[in-house]
Length: 419
Image 1 (cartoon, rainbow, N blue to C red):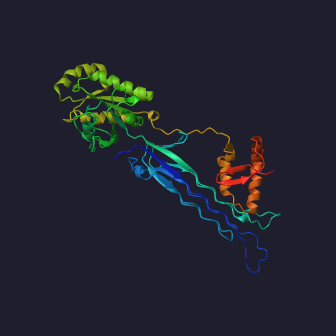
Image 2: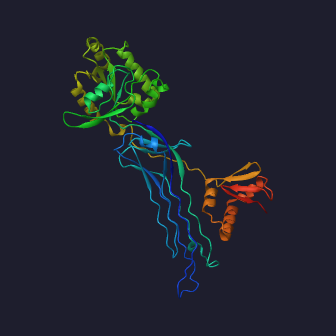
Image 3: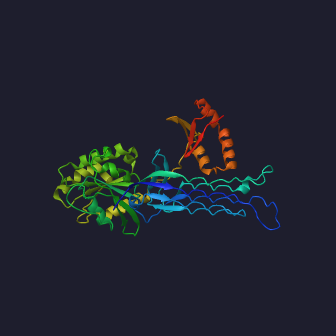
């Protein structure tokens, strides 16, 4: 089953907790703190694997979680890092943050990796908080929570040549004749419901990949027929092969068909109109097609080749013509070269305050992370209060009109405000 869209949830590993421990060794009086740090949580990494052709695996498994870091130990023993989670996807997969629509990665080549969610930092043990004023702190941090993201995966097939044509133009028969691909072939429109890939071998043993896209009709760029779902697969092809019904067996003009196809591609993506192309006038085994040959030659000139996908006429020449176009394609014209993703820096806002039913709810990645990492014993609470004061939370609450006795909620932690 061909699946080219999926939604999944990924979560990197939480960091391991730091611990409170003290040296208790013979002949070592006042040994001091020895609590180790927790290990970093595992990352979520996505990698392109050329052995995959579909996003089918993500239809049944949509939740992915990396392992957390190991907690710290006594004697300054640090916890181990959590194992990274590797998720394999087909080359050509776009990874998009489903919440804000930001493109996180575009994996186009085998082995290409992208760090999608970074594991949480391990919490520090009490040995890290020792000072000359407090030589035996009872303070340690919890591990930072891992990142959780809702992702949208979209697959755009990678192929050298993309077949474009109306339903029943003979594209499926052609790809079965040119390669070992065996798509469904029938005499009714929209027989092809999914893109099909085939490897073409030339007489000189060169090879390239060809993609059969479901047939387009007028209005495809607006979602008519199946065009809206599959037009994006043409975007990554280097060359377009227009397969035309030269015999006009469906009662339409062959030149009108070509004009409509051109308009639909340009309406969907203007760059497609400038893509190198070749015209395959199919069904030349039909007498009506032979009658149209002269008219088609005048219109298309050297960009035209006559074929019959049924009898095999012109197939060898077509393979060679396409290979010649591919080998002469300028390097810079390859449509799916990677471009660096540029992120605009935005200053982090440490917190937001919202009054909900008399409760001052404080949210924000920075302050919520602080709550998650705080161990609320006596020393931990003191450090927490000092940190939020430094962040300006109390001043902000006063500006919001908070009064002694009001409740403040940060994540799952609630406290009563007092001056």
